[in-house]
Image 1 (cartoon, rainbow, N blue to C red):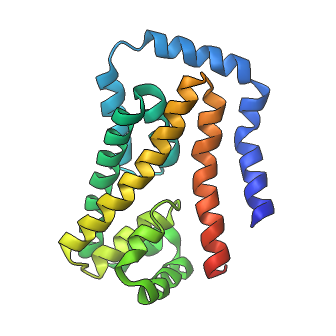
Image 2: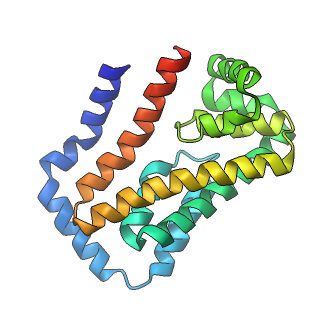
Length: 204
């Protein structure tokens, strides 16, 4: 898992290492030409809101929010967008059952998530929140199991706040250093680290 994660990270950042200066210059020009922070705010929030169904790289989008808007606004819009997506996912899980979850992660991973849910209960939505794909599937499973709404919202608000703050902090710090590469590496590394920890903890 460690070698695979390293190779994936290398493949993702290779274009930035090769074209780093060009990308940095393009980004600076883009930021200077962006006249409406509200447009960025709506775009970031909108993308994160549909993350439950669309292949949105939420870690990159959330980090971009911090990079483009700053720590506090980036945190707010990431938190809001992620929470809207979770509410939508809960509703889909409660109405469509296991079919949608199995389509997203596959039958084997779906069964593994259900076993982990039996072990950790409602906390599954927190444990897997930062893991790509499985995070979305855990929300669907929470809806399928009709987790009490107030408990679901309490756990999701807490988990999303922590994740949003982390990504926004990486983005804002990267903007302070004027380094898009650092923002990108941070946005990719955090979910990879979370995935690696869970793979080590729960096995393949």
